[in-house]
Length: 114
Image 1 (cartoon, one colour):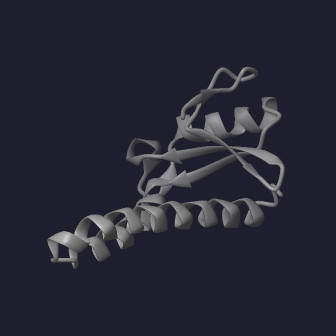
Image 2 (spheres, rainbow, N blue to C red):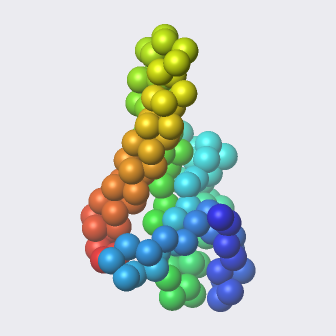
């Protein structure tokens, strides 16, 4: 659920809690980049959020986030049985959610937020 930082006025994709620490997460789409480097507006947002915000900001490039979904969707495409497909879809959605949660925890640890 998208939130707004009261101090900076910036919108944030989601606020999560990792080991009792609140972290702002921004999954940056293709328009936030020039090649694989953040564009000027994205870098400004990150710098201002860091300087003015009291919550750590974790920016995740879309290609890393999409990769977590891609592997689950790929497994789903390989399932051909109709009766099992719905069960597998629910299972894969749970797997994808767990992968993303673990990924966020790993990123927060790597960035020393927690």
